[in-house]
Length: 128
Image (cartoon, rainbow, N blue to C red; front, side, top):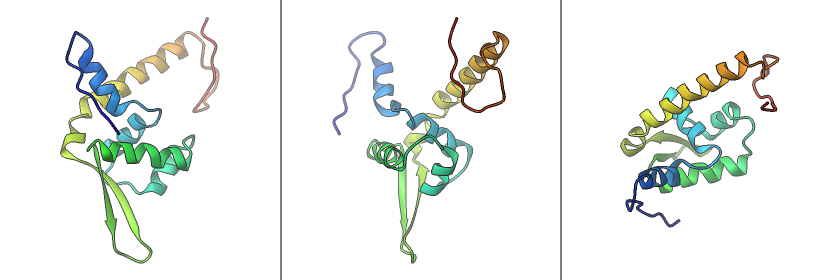
């Protein structure tokens, strides 16, 4: 996987950040790692129900290649693995916390405008 350093103009550092955390599930994976300690693959599957096993494996692999998470392999029978944040990955805490805060704000704003009409976790809405 090729990565770039974006530093040529204003806004470029945002591109540098996005190339590491972009991907539908990467920020969600990081969120769960920040809320707990090591996670096994199955725990991620239970917590991120809409993410397929294939996509989860791909996103975990990319985060590992970027040095954001570390995959620990234990020589037990059967083989066990878990994922933890690296020190480099822990530096993303303010980014993920800001995303959580803004997401809560968005959900409250949508509820006030009447977009949300039930307690379902995931809803399709039409913005008026």
